[in-house]
Image (cartoon, rainbow, N blue to C red; front, side):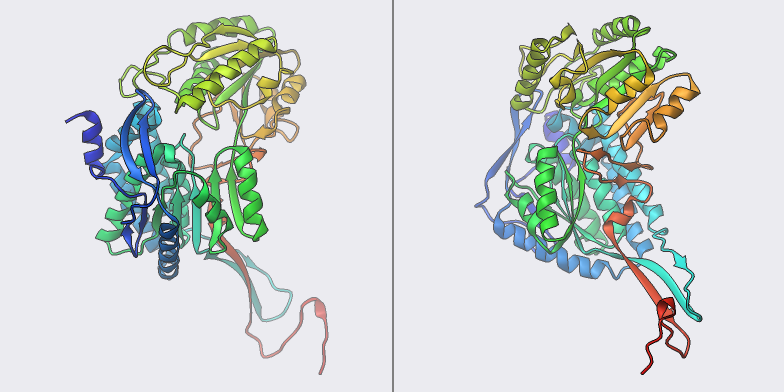
Length: 509
């Protein structure tokens, strides 16, 4: 049995023919949906075929999710956490197989695939603890013998639309918190990573069915964008969480807002690292390389710009070029590989176009920049000596292209850093306290994530994840991100025998 067959067998995917699952109807039996071909970006070969969901499947899933949400909201929150704990245990048991499937279908290296599943396990553990801490506040009423407080209630049905680059982890950031908050979640994953999503749904089904739990996790695999649009427009879906490009996120946000629904947007990023004159390059170099090359530059937190003090520019450039020469490109399942392929042919063309634009606009290609002549969608990671005024430097290209820009003063570096339209992740490398604190101040980085002496990529789930400006403003995972999946209710109890009005108003009859 091949490695692909073994992986699919271990995850219960040996026989596939449906891209929708609901608690009421099980796996869809409809055969009218479009065929989705799951491809291996390392070889360009097909892994499997999946039958996409239909409009009828959509209605089945939504009605089933509404039913599940009504039952689930009556379950005490700590018991909801216990269900997430059981799913976390299921993920632990299948971490290796699911990590391999992520590598096969997404192209990120095995270590990153396993790391993505570990993120799911970590957020499950976080959610279990959070299930006992859905705190409200108690306020002092201005009226005698009144008690005032706020509490949090479930929203109902949450829709999650996820991207290919994190085919399983981003769903879990949303779905596990949504679950402990008392909601049912309907997932519309990227068709580019349909197998990964179906594998996760199979694991969910095992836990839900074994423990006779409501069908709080459901899925719609759509070959295009129709069902994502329906989630955005559907008033039965209280919150739509979208991860993807800024142009599409704008459309989703507008459509949800038109019906006065809630949206959580995690969009693009053009993340920069500032390297100060007093930076420790032994820390900076590996952080920059991992941030720029990890997942072949296809993370929203990938490092795309490095702003370097002119006194360290030549040294850093030399060390980065030497480090890039050691990056092993190839089969993501091979232990020695550091960078796998891009996701598809379209991504390769965007990489090629960006390299050409960088050179046309005056950039100097220091290394890389070639599309490799081999099966699959492999490219060389590239470093470009650039000017901050080059339009391509201010754009987000989902590929391993790194722009080096020099600066002279810290305020200049921060201005260049903040000049782009996105505001997701940022970092500074320095051994000077004043530089670090200025970068973290209100006059410093304008991003949702700001790090000192570590890179832009690899956020921990304990903190809220998300960004500002064209990144969308949403927050997922840790801190108090759970509040996005609940509705706030302010409550006042009058336990007196009188009816005093607020602000001392008298209304005598």
